[in-house]
Image (cartoon, rainbow, N blue to C red; front, side):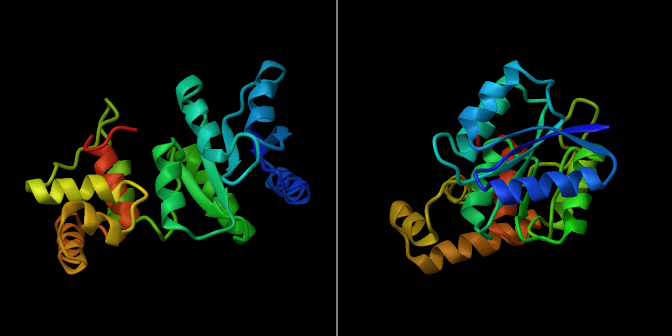
Length: 216
């Protein structure tokens, strides 16, 4: 029986999620919290959860702050980020904060069930936003937890672009910072998509994380 905690400031949605999760039969909701501050305070009075469903936008302490706190204090707890919005910057920021998966709040119940099962069995959940190659790499970690895929050879400009792509800067802002045109940035991006065999900016970020190009 997997133990679950829910952190979301929308009470009706949170209660609905709790009922849905327990209807799956393999999960028990230990406790719920309105925000990160309340969630952290409840650790003193409950067993540790195996999985936390974490809303991103909350008052007092949001999902980014709370995920970083969990990463520092209880890295063994898996975080499934919840959002109302399909936003690549939010996805990037939550993965960097320690989330193991990301789903939209209006997803089909079957996707939520699949996400929870994937977290239990594989430790991660990737939807269509994360490429099949990344999933394959996750599954091919060696016994020390490192990825077996060799690092591609990047030139200095590609490495600089990749690091900036892992920030919240837009592509235009990256172009301004690198003192090149937006078309040149498009070229760097497309070149890395091809070289690293990824299809999205999220894929670039995950490549940079697993190859220690950026620290999280």
